[in-house]
Length: 166
Image (cartoon, rainbow, N blue to C red; front, side, top):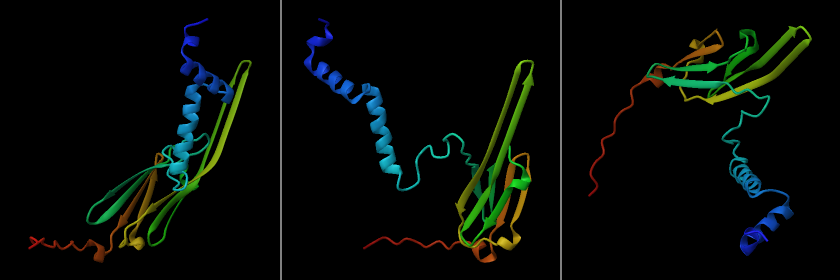
């Protein structure tokens, strides 16, 4: 008889775990996966979405000042001809296709890999963007967009004084 068998609560837990077909850590892992999927699943906001095998989600940085919004998207390994940028009144869409092919030939060894996949990133835009003057450039896998604000959007916001409540 081992010391483990002297503890009935531990013995029962181990028996229950074995009957389910896993270790306590694997059942904890499964339960955490279920909880995260239940919480994030309906919103489409899973914390690691886009990092599954075979997917590509471009990283995007936004900067805004009183005259324009600058959008920078990292698209490593993507050719300029494979990128499309479009905009509606309130949504900027960056989409395209990433193609990667590698081939290695050595004595007694050959390896070839291909990856093809599409990507799409949509960003909400504030009202007042002048799309007629928008500008885009692409260099070394970096897409830069300059979205100027319309004259009406450039107007300075008026400060409203706060009065002490009586």
